[in-house]
Image (cartoon, rainbow over all chains, first blue to last red; front, top):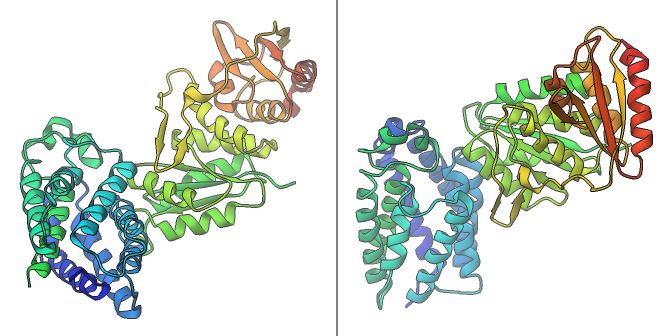
Length: 205
Length: 239
């Protein structure tokens, strides 16, 4: 049994709830090493996603992902908009003709999402960005079921986000701080881990 | 005549508007559209606003986009990916916009306007930007500017008899005139040289009234270029 458009909508609603719940945490992380708007921007973006999903009923997983992409690009405002927007857009293209997503499709979608973020932001692993959560998640995304696969990906993303704490930022606003960016978790890596955890929890239901 | 338009993408509506104001003063007939801030008036970049600005700036000759930081670049990249005839340049925002606006005012095509923005970084002491390719969009760096042609250039010595020399308005006048000609024009003052199409490089020479500059040119319209420069100087740049 694969993941349908409806399942994806459920997962995205859970993701929006998680982002709202962690809004202040993301703001605080970003205030230390960035411009402090990541929590606000992500919350605005995902609230707009909820509105868009209520107003439209995309009938394929790819259509859902594309609607999320265009909404985030338009509404987020900071760098997370184009980055997550590109990620969802590439994921949508990767599963274009699927009616339901099998575990292999999820791996493909996550891989395409990572490719999109790397192309847009030009960050490499170790630069203290969302790539540090998503790259290990993609490598860990294996399993016979969506539940297994997403649980592994979420755990790897959380470990990856934690591992950004000692890093010195080399991309984005935090890179202007140089050495002073070390000692704090990257807010983008954190939000990536939060999203994957929300997806994994829905898959486990 | 339709001219190349410009879009200034910034995190701040005020900053974008200010850059547009400065550019418009030197290039009154060029459409320069600000796209700054988020839809609710905050700091950030708004994809829809950038896409709409691109639309407004397009009058058939193409649009060059310049940006300030981080997400402005990404949003501008995405807008360029979905728009034919739009070009994103990695140039300093103020200098690049002014140089591009002057080139566009003179009727330069999309390539030349983009290069004018990039040449703004070649002003002595200016920053150097890297070339990059991202998400299928070529971001032109200063390295991609073609080298001068190999033929020996014709050269004339031109006395500057106007009071302010090659300052802002005369420099803009020269750059506009040179942009319209198929010639590579180099202006030398002492040890410093400037591309004749770059208003900022010309200003940076610091040539004042009473000074002499050496003007050389190569290319099919080299002679016209030298004559035009001499004529402008003889008229004291209409001061």
